[in-house]
Length: 158
Image (cartoon, rainbow, N blue to C red; front, side, top):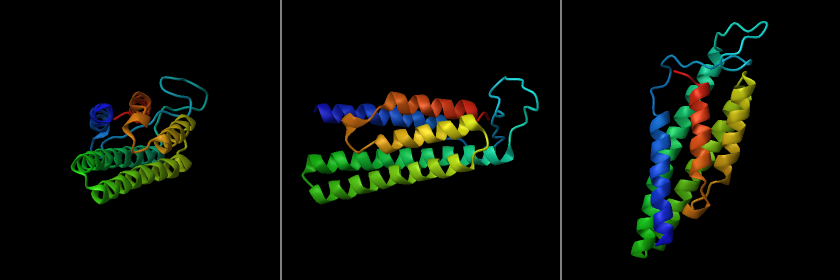
């Protein structure tokens, strides 16, 4: 029962996180300059990099997709375990892990493309956090994941 409660909390937290990142791509995405939000430094025009706008859009799209698939597959896994269908539960677990692996890969790829050091660091941090996630509802730090997603949303101002 405790595991079911943990999964329910996870599903709620990830759904909230997914909703915050669920925006159409390419809709005026902007990223602060390397000096950071609101900073005024020599040579900083405050104009967002078009490349970083694409990095933001790809990262947010990957997060939205991964969280949706992850939550769906966790639900299937829990239902299959409850029904005693171990093969179905295992297949759902594999698909949930694949969604996380794809998200982590995308975050790392986009981090390498990011020009803004803050964005690059954040995407690396998110990739590390996603790598630590598992399909065990008790191993998920949804607060940290939500905090990272909020930071990405702040850096990727619409």
